[in-house]
Amino acid sequence: MLEAGQILQQRYQLQRKLGQNAGRQTWLAEDLATQPARLAIVKLLAFGDRLQWEDLKLFEREANVLKQLNHPRIPKYCDYFSIDDRILWFALVQEFIPGSSLKELINQGQKFSEQQVRKYATEVLEILDYLHSLLPPVLHRDIKPSNLILGEDNQIYVVDFGAVQNKASSQGGTFTVVGTYGYTPVEQFGGRAVPASDLYALGASLIHLVTGVAPADLPQRNMRIQFSDRTNLSPQLVRWLETMTHPDVEQRFHSAAQALEALNSCLVTSRSFLISQPYGSRIQLQKTATQLQIKIPARGLQFSDSFLIFFVSFWYGILFLVSRGNIFHSFIVFHWLAGLFPLVMLLFPAFGEVFINFHPHDFFLEWKLFGKTYRVKQGDTAAICKVYISTEPISINNDPLKTITIEAGVKKYKFGSFSPELTDAERQWLVREIQQWLGLGQTEI
Image 1 (cartoon, rainbow, N blue to C red):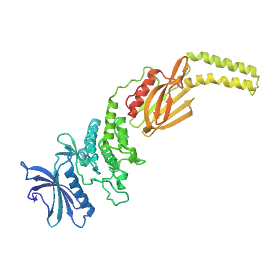
Image 2 (image 1 turned 180 degrees about the vertical axis):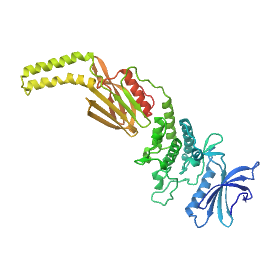
Image 3 (image 1 turned 45 degrees about the vertical axis):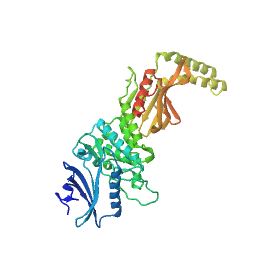
């Protein structure tokens, strides 16, 4: 029976037990071979009825992988041996990292700011980039708050490589399910782990930090973790976390480097210059982390419309007198329809409204006249690559017609030309707001 004070291999003196479960024990020990004696972590695996050969294979794999790793924020390998103390134990010794796990900090009720979350995400991504860049790539497969240590130097360390994979999984071969429910993506439960699997686990861990609730206890919709209503994060960081934890591995970032680049881009965007809403503008804009709503209201009749109203009224008066009730005469019908164009030019700007709604997955443009919808367009938010002010090939009163254009893949969605019309200042402000919410950064307007 292992107990405190016992010395293993005439070198490692056990201090206190840190954890125990199903044939495994983890001890804090002193390495008596160092001067002064340094603390070390001793992980022990008991060889008995409960031990599966796959458990021993994973244990040996962890030791072999740690031997090969050389990163300042990964515990260093120290030793590997077996002892016979009525039970055959296999022991792995590694460097002790003083500090607290993020899980311990969560349990203590600590709140994490967006700045802290970004810092932790950056540091873990740098470690994952190192691991995934090795040949063959090393996949941790069990990233979670309890395996992320905030060291005394205020840096994050990744520990516990007990589920590590350092070779590609074979299609159709046998596999052992590893990972922790709530942090492990679907494909890993199916025996297929890829670098994006570690990214999912990191994203889920960060969601735990910002909500204080384990991912498994948060609601889900279409297999996606619903967390945005429980945080005050910027919309850019919320969407970054949603990409990290997308259930479809193909929709996630493909590498730690790509995720880190996107995170840095979010940081630049969130600090970028904002144009304020022009004075007197009646546009209504509401935004949260998961929604951006824009309403461009009808401007109503203006004095400048008086001539057009007179012209339309006069035109239809003449047609009425000429027709004398014969409204189906072809001549009358033609000129009746011809009179509709100036009427439409009057009605759309005066009584037309535009509604634009952006959500994390899709967006809608809706045009209404007198409160009735007459046109709707829908697009994929993830496909949006550019938002800008474009000049159309037509002009009104010798002024070029300008519109706000949203490019989503090969499609273009336009609004804000004359139904209802916008000022240049309003167009610039709306473009900046949409770019900010989408996290696109600022492009030319």
